[in-house]
Length: 408
Ligand SMILES: Cc1cc2nc3c(=O)[nH]c(=O)nc-3n(C[C@H](O)[C@H](O)[C@H](O)COP(=O)(O)OP(=O)(O)OC[C@H]3O[C@@H](n4cnc5c(N)ncnc54)[C@H](O)[C@@H]3O)c2cc1C
Image (cartoon, rainbow, N blue to C red):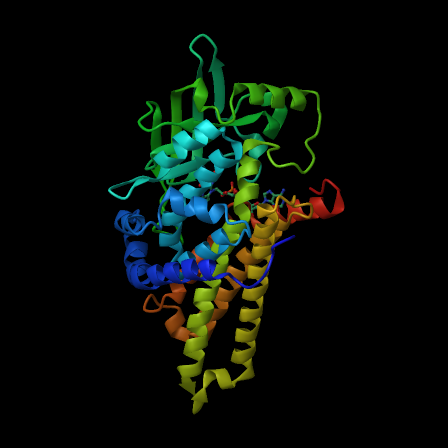
């Protein structure tokens, strides 16, 4: 892992501090309001766009940081600010990664800029894989994409669910079945360009946490897209399907199927979100424990409280190390032979849930009220053991990778 180090360079520190300033000055003061409103926070995303924080240029620069730490460091700071707003700012990234990992250079150049728009006309994008009957089990997907050779068009029909930015996105990336007999290997990803007829938003979900992030169903009713909207192109798809038909395995290679390639690449970044939330809650709890006096002494004087804080900090640092390792491996082209990306997501997600619960406990009654942000952080953290693969699915992936056994 040449180049891996725990010390950030001056440029990385400057980016971290710049985002921290935005998180502290813009996101934190706005977080409770958008959580209550449960609406997409366009003004906050616009502010991020105005300073270049919500932009293709910024994410591309962090994505291609050769150490791999650009993205996790930036994301941890944003989610330290607030998870709901953080997801509103970074949610487009999942669709962008979907195009980056599966698309041709031309598709990358055409569609990713349209996902972000520009500071005067901000846009978002959505990545739509999950369906009502296909959550953890992506092979149960039903949305069909049929090729109309005469017109060189793909026709998509089906219902996607849980799509972050679904229906409000300028560009949707949709995973669909192109050859039903092949399970997850018979899937492909498609760009649905802005304004395409037949795509509509279904139910918008009212959620437990990350409420500023928009989550909705996306209905595809006879959606027709040009042939060039198939990510990676028809020739590559035909080759991949032929290989799958012959039963040739792609092993642990990236790109086994379109959705999995996207999740594989995005897991450490999602784990970094969880680290940011956990750190925010821990800092508030530490501060509270040193100032709250009971029995004539600050509550941190009690081992029962201080040891909890010690455990919280240890878990957060361990989670960050797993995230940085996976990110550095991805940047240097090392395959996740032991599912290191999943390890980072599993541990960081569980850490966010545990640490925010501990923080709430340390704040006592105050922790349970909306007067203190820890209550919101605890609700926000709960999603991190569910989306981008539940904790159980991460364990399944890790167990299979380390054992070679198709554990069920
Ligand atoms: C707020 C939010 C945002 C989301 N954003 C997106 C998005 O942008 N795009 C997208 O495509 N999807 C998105 N999702 C979907 C998310 O990835 C799924 O919810 C997740 O993969 C779990 O699927 P499910 O909800 O159908 O649960 P299920 O798969 O039904 O799982 C239910 C329970 O069973 C367990 N389980 C299932 N199978 C196994 C097994 N083999 N072994 C052990 N346990 C098992 C699970 O771990 C879980 O505890 C989002 C979801 C939410 C809630």
